[in-house]
Image 1 (cartoon, rainbow, N blue to C red):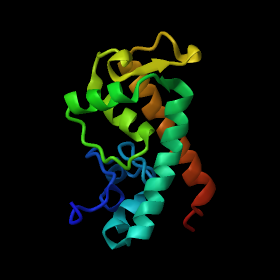
Image 2: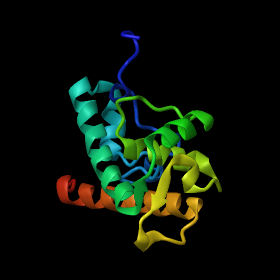
Image 3: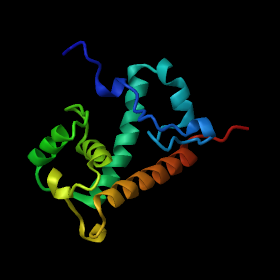
Length: 150
């Protein structure tokens, strides 16, 4: 097990890259285009910094919409759905990965419950809403932090 790379040493890529079409923030993994280009040259510290930014944004989005009712049920749902997660990943990342595979399964199947403001959303609608908000926040972060190229 010691030979296995830590999850943050691996790429966050989910195979839906939009930077090839000119997006500065990937619609799939939400990394910046320059991070994708340089990823293989990044050391572990740089890779972890990217992961931490993505995780921080995602945790805010997920837990503003959901409550965790049962960590055991979430763990079992991840296993049943064959979702690849690392034990060290934050719960919000695990939830997002489950949502990507859940289809029409009810949130209760993963020990989750919508917060009042979001009641009425289907699992698919919630997944899409989280993904869109994640993209918007990532783009805003990019716009604030990355200097424009002259």
